[in-house]
Amino acid sequence: MSRIIDKTAAELSADIREGRLTSVEVTTAFLDRIDAVDGTIKAFLHVDREGALATAREVDADIAAGKETFAFAGVPIAIKDVVVTKGLPTTAASKILEGWIPPYDATISERIKAARMPILGKTNMDEFAMGSSTEYSAFQKTLNPWDTGRIPGGSGGGSAAAVAAKMAPVAIGTDTGGSIRQPGAVTGTFGAKPTYGSNSRYGLIAFSSSLDTPGPVARNALDAAILHEIISGYDPRDSTSIDAPVPPVVRAARAGANGDLAGVKLGVVKEFAEGSDAAEPGVIAAYEAAVEQLVKLGAEIVEVSCPSFTYALPTYYLIAPSEASSNLARYDGVRYGLRTGDDGEHSLEEVMSLTREAGFGPEVKRRIILGTYALSAGYVDAFYGKAQLVRTLIKQDFEKAFEQVDAIISPTTPFIAFEFGERMDDPYQMYLADLYTIPTNLYGGPAVSVPVGLSEGMPVGLQVMGPVMGDDVAYRVAAAYESTQDALLADTAPEPEPEGK
Amino acid sequence: MSTISREEVAHLARLARLEVTDDELDAFAGQLDVILESMKTLAEVNTDGVQPTSHAVPLVNVFREDQPQPSLSREAALSGGPDTFEDRFRVPRILDEEA
Image 1: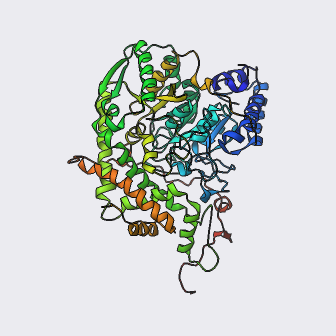
Image 2: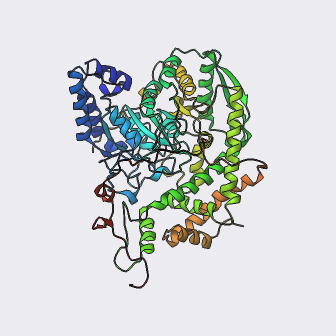
Image 3: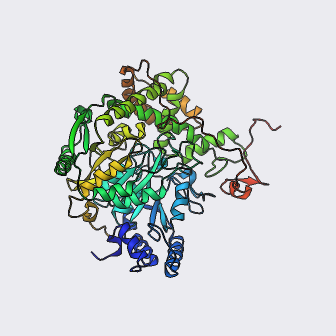
């Protein structure tokens, strides 16, 4: 295991800072890996070899000149295509934004650039982050490196697959209902959804504004924590940004690595284990083996009751599409992206309708229609309004649980990566992938997914949910679990077929 | 009885400015019906006296100083437009008849 691409981001960062490797060597190794295997995996929508190497050369020059550099300087990164990057194509995997070159940077893009991490490219996703398999990308199907007949999760399947196939040491994702954690779970990678409001949404292409949260994707807790601290923190350009110190997640990941969870109380949600909400037996087996490890480290398991979690899925699928139907009204064929039917015959309104019909895929249309319905006169109280009330109850369930426990654990997703096409005809079956991840988004708290084992040869994730601004607890528990393993699960993934592009 | 009819879906699509095809209408009506059925379960939840949650973080009155800030240049703001003309976005005619 001497390849550059096998090292963690923290190891690469130390190698670069201490002169054992240059950033150009590291960045080139990942770009070459992309050339070798992304023809098969198809995680990237756009690769920026020149831009990444330019940043790498700057970092190398600074280090050669003895200038101080910061964490992850010179360590390359992949960014989900829903995050706006100045001068780099950004499409949210939608035809309606095909060819758009943003004239500005998202706050997290700015912070990545300020940290001087070479940006390898933009990763594939479900269109506008709506989906759980990345099959709804308008451009390409991303394959799961563990089994290329299976989905890489979604919406951030590209970022997860890129990290799982070692085409990037770390990546950025966004999580509205599980889009960082569920792809992490099914690709054997680590993903964290930070506390809502602790990471700026400025420059994220909006899906559901009260839920969208950007966060890190990595192979282990420490790399994710370091990236988490780079991108987190107050941003006056996001009116929902929390003006408070970032939770000490790096310290927590390092502390957790000592493998001591004495005195830590972990809640298990009674309602998750019951009835139709139960996970596949193989997923439960891997999860329970992980819980056993946590108990050996000193954690105490406490059953908590969160009765309103049963209603989280319908609540989410009213709130998120309602907000989406409003947010996606901006794609009108005037200010950016596609315009269809502008032939002198069609009126402005007709051109808008034709443009949106041509530019949006099926899941986006379904959710726009669903949101329009939930917000329409006569239904708004029964649907959108009711969902906002139930959201309060879900939040209260979390608050009550965190009076008893430090963190709540569950499987990340009820089933392993499914096969392509398996859930495309029945959207409701697709939605079930997010059964365990959605409550956290409605509450606004943090949650991470850490790989804990295999079921039918496919990775299973453990989800650790913390209280609002208690991201550090989730990292500590996840890192403690990692300390019980001889090797990271991510490092045992099969080698992708190098078909090339 | 279905929760949502094909005609209702067509009406909603019109409201949302989506020129959906007949095939899409057929597919969406059935799929949305399944989804909306599951949402009816919310009606069984007792929410008497519960306040709605519109945002995860209860921030109110987020103010900033009313000071001019640098912003995008006109050229940058127009750079993504599908059709621009004399420093503006050109749009198709809005009225049915020529004015």
